[in-house]
Image 1 (cartoon, rainbow, N blue to C red):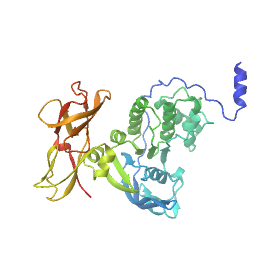
Image 2: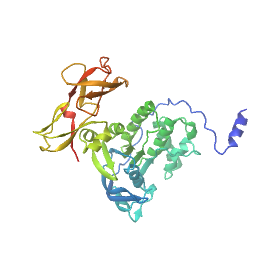
Image 3: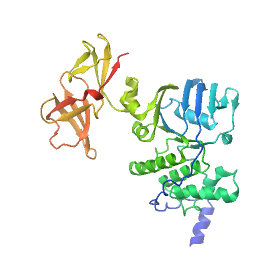
Image 4: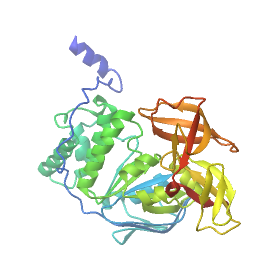
Length: 383
């Protein structure tokens, strides 16, 4: 019977996937991933034009040794293009790219990817289906003698919790295990730069949280300069020492995660980072009168039209009794102890969104009272 099954599979071009083995393999002991010699990266007025469209537009960017940076922006803003340029698989049209102050790309020159000391983990993992797990990880270690190559590959597999699966093939792994394998293959050569393109997008929410935390621990251990592309602002806040926001091929804001969140450079950045309720008003005597009360605007001149942006968290709190601005609770969505509410306030067309701890006294259709935390209200000039 078993031989018949094997013969049946051999008759097909690609073997049928085996049932994934249990995915409860523990990650290896922290602090055992090895250390890289981190690199600096610099983009100087880099242009990239693809299909007649300018993807990067005079991009200036510097990444310091050992920092973990998240690239954030809308689709088409240039995030993945930056990774491909650093990896050496995308030619630039003008400007220069340097690694450790040595030019690796300009309009007429592109250093080969294998000579750059960088590791790129693709969104789809790009595993070699015909190679075992050990062979997948050892693939990028061809410059080492066999003994050292397989020792280093085994160490990487052990760190990501795949020890004992060396002779299995990628199709025998679950999605989370394939992600671990891709990470092991990326860190095994101990590159000076590690790049991850949407590494957690294919994982379910429960697995994503665990894999993300363990991956971050590995990246901290390796100490390589790390670039993570993500569309998820919350993920960027959790992972990055810095967030670099891109728009139309240019850097809009480059700062610590905390500063980018609390001090977004414009309303578009604020909208991208989180939902906001917006009120348009005019500054008079250093403040703007709104249906939620007076909002102080000490840095804005009288007569300036502004947008008041109020996030659902921190900037506003809701109570079932006075004091506060009266509103009518229009909707309530329970979300694991932190509920999402929408409140109608008189003289406001837009509903106010609030996220806070569940309260059984908040009933749809009842009156509630909103209080503003002025320290977390954002004020932007209206263009």
